[in-house]
View 1 (cartoon, rainbow, N blue to C red):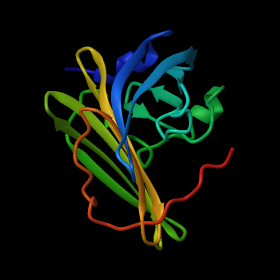
View 2 (view 1 turned 135 degrees about the vertical axis):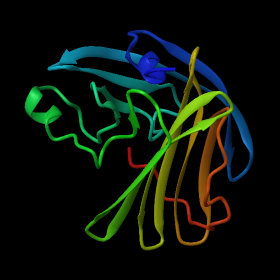
View 3 (view 1 turned 180 degrees about the vertical axis):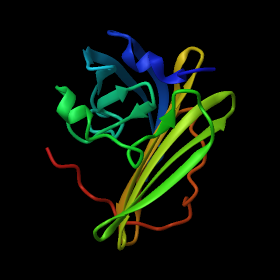
View 4 (view 1 turned 90 degrees about the vertical axis):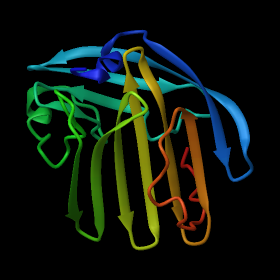
Length: 184
């Protein structure tokens, strides 16, 4: 399956998947859609939005598909100069998917990007750690579009998790962390 993530670049494409939040085990439905798509240089740039209470998920925001593969930069990409800032360190999954893991140090933090197969889908996972703080998101794509994902955000002694659809297990599921409040 080449470029399984292309559903992220279909304007209006939406997905609705069962979700569970921890702590507490609250069940809900995550509703997200591709809100904007535009070409920038040789890339496609999209913006994904999710409905409350999931509008702050880490998978929300800008996604970029280039001939090299898929990126999820923290800021919008509006021109070729911003596109040129994306490199191998930022690549989540190659255009022709293959398993990969890449880790880099960013000052006091470490960032790791993974691509892997899970239950017939391809998944990307980005994890940022700094001391006791951690944030991680996962998003999986299959023939029909987004098949699942989730996030972990925390620091200290407890954790806040959201998983939706078919979400692969988190490699650090046993790590105890403290909830970090979402900024408005």
